[in-house]
Amino acid sequence: MAGQKMLKFVDVERDMPEKRPPNLRKEDFGEIYAEYATAKAAEQASRCSQCGVPYCQSHCPLHNNIPDWLRMTAEGRLEEAYELSQATNTFPEICGRICPQDRLCEGNCVIEQSGHGTVTIGSVEKYITDTAFENGWVKPIKPHTERAESVGIIGAGPGGLAAADILRRRGVQVTVYDRYDRGGGLLTYGIPGFKLEKDIVMQRMQQLEDGGVEFVLNCDVGDDLSFDAIRGKHEAVLIATGVYKTRGLEAPGVGAEGIVRAIDYLTASNRKSFGDVVEEFESGELNATGKKVVVIGGGDTAMDCVRTAIRQGAESVKCLYRRDEANMPGSMREVQNAKEEGVEFVWLSAPKGFTGDKVEGVMVQKMRLGAPDASGRQMPELIEGSDYIEDADLVVQALGFEPEDIPTLWNVPELEVTRWGTIKAEFTTGQTSLEGVFAAGDIVRGASLVVWAIKDGRDAAEAILEYVNQGAAVAAE
Ligand code: FAD
Ligand code: SF4
Ligand code: SF4
Image: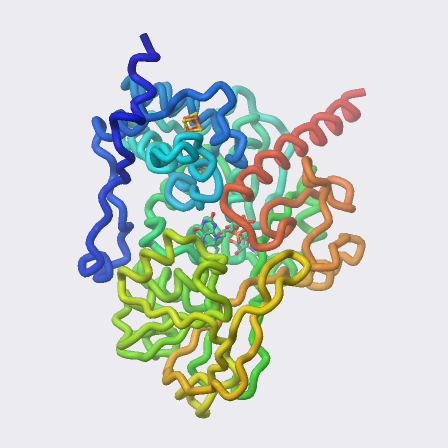
């Protein structure tokens, strides 16, 4: 009986895959969590209580069929578990690694609520698809029939790639344009290898290429190729360009040498991991080796920067954040990992300015938490006379990202945007104000999560298929 294998949460404790010790993991950019052994994955999956109303599933943006693939894993039916898992998630092995599970599926597991420790959903999800790749169960895409219609996708991040996958499976001709020299978007050049190793992303790129998706890389749309040209070439277009404009500080001395943007810093480091020659890294501009590093910000990007600096051999790494630990937007798991690796957090501190033409220090103002704002979040207030200088010879600004001004850059004023500059798109289909043009991922939501970009890309692909089918039906009349 299937049921006998499950409901083990009372006897079996929650057990995450082994984490490499900090002194070893900070020597390289490899992932810090090991893989479950088969027996361990089955054991951990068997803790699930097979809820009739699974809150884990309703809080997963993709509504993954979690209880069923956990049961199959516990029963040793791994190939079936893989088939079920990939039916709703284009990149389960990626989500299993980098979703903030504590805020999504695992944070809503009833076992967690009853004090037994959540089922380790993310680690099992990763295990299932890693095993599928190892065993050759992940096959190149082979559409039943080829269609004449083509779709152009601008942006090879998770949103664009998820849409490419769905469209190609239905036989549509797909071309993905990206300004970088490799696909993957932030999976490749933003998120560091210690969270997501690069060969995991590249094996998906290979699968899409083998399945007939055409990639046009090193192609900055609006510069190398016009948006109109892409529109003229394809029946429909998907914009999945993400958000890349750095929210910068405005403070005296901010233009000094040695004050850099998080995206540039992380991209240089990720390129090094690919073995590329990166001039700004070799020159020391984007390299923390031997430096006193201060990272400004409290989100996941800031956590990725501090942990990268540790691995590059910085003399010291401090994270400056204007609220306290409890109010940090970054995932608690990542803050804990950073602390273990030697990052020092300077809470309730904001930069007021910088000293030196080549940066020498950050002028820091101490803060306290005051009355809550309209959202209920306590606002930081200055403590007069508490200023001091924090020594620094590399400062990384990690204060978030905003959309670029696409209508102007691409000369399409008719493309409507919101007051935040994100593209205005219909919620479930991604349809924009332009006929046959859809949008998905961060460029619609603002800076968000990989799993939401995948969801948007999949939804937009279904809407594009409907649009293309209508066009084909009209043409046939
Ligand atoms: P992107 O991944 O940004 O991809 C957009 C692509 O469009 C890029 O390849 C870009 O080169 C291309 N492009 C842009 N403009 C043009 C143009 N004009 N012409 C051609 N191509 C263009 N999310 C998580 O869930 N977990 C995490 O741990 C996590 N960590 C993160 C760490 C960092 C440092 C950052 C910055 C983000 C992180 N995120 C994380 C967020 C996540 O990466 C994004 O939400 C997700 O990648 C958005 O996907 P997307 O497809 O919309 O855009
Ligand atoms: Fe959890 Fe993310 Fe997987 Fe959904 S996709 S089950 S939220 S890890
Ligand atoms: Fe299993 Fe937890 Fe989901 Fe319930 S909420 S089905 S126990 S993983």
